[in-house]
Image 1 (cartoon, rainbow, N blue to C red):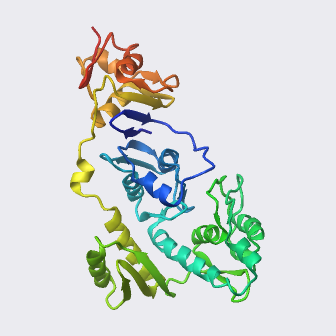
Image 2 (cartoon, rainbow, N blue to C red):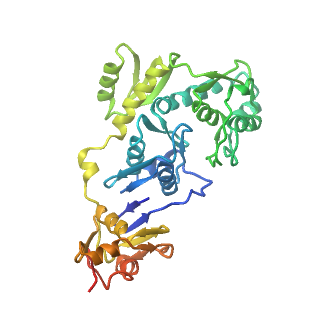
Length: 384
């Protein structure tokens, strides 16, 4: 896999990335700021799961993948210098009928319908729990709404994950057998309320829960796309007029109550998913100039590079740098001798430290080419 972060000061190349070891993640405003940082991304036929883990490692934002999305699907993504959220948008767009959503605690990638309804379910289920505030004692309510450790071990069953965490939250799940059997890989999540954890897990089985009217008792129920719910959308003044028109065009007759640039909408869950998708498309859309703008660069000689990889061929490395705007000239590139060199592999484990191009390029290519001339605007490779 080839990935890259480019800034005015440095370049980081991520060619193969191990799974993130993070156990703490950015949430809330820190999450939003992390996704707003601009980078450039390029990958060639690498696994979806690897790319999501790499982006998670770079952002320190938890990126959950819905159980129905194949992590081994090979995808190719190439962006200009764009916010990280646009990289995520393009990664999810490479898989048919797949989308992403951003919440306060995490990002989730999965089937479009399930992903677009998730924020509405998170809000609705939180409202269900909050309705118990005056119906149960204060200590029980605090226990129910407190953030808990939402992680689990390798090969855990989602049913048992919820049962264990329900006990911590003081929740009784009346019908746990309604949760299908499955085995999940180890998961490290940010601390979150049990309500949110249950919602995101159950949504992957097209399930949710209803809360008893007088206590912390949850009943697992199938998601009803025709259920009518009220949901509040933060639209923003810049998008208010265009979103209002798009929503009315998509769902004529829906009830929208505006308070400034915020909208309270009452409609079916299925319709909410469509409205959320329209809003997300407007919020995260990229203009042509944004997506194709040139990446600011300093001199190749003084730019810092870091490689995280095991190996790559000379051809792969050269092609990668060229795609990222680093001009590499190879003298007699089509000659049989040079074509043979381009097939040779480079062991990259030793290039762990960030180094200037003036030093790094000779280290990478010097064993294969007699001359490695690193200039401000290009690298010239020659056998003579």
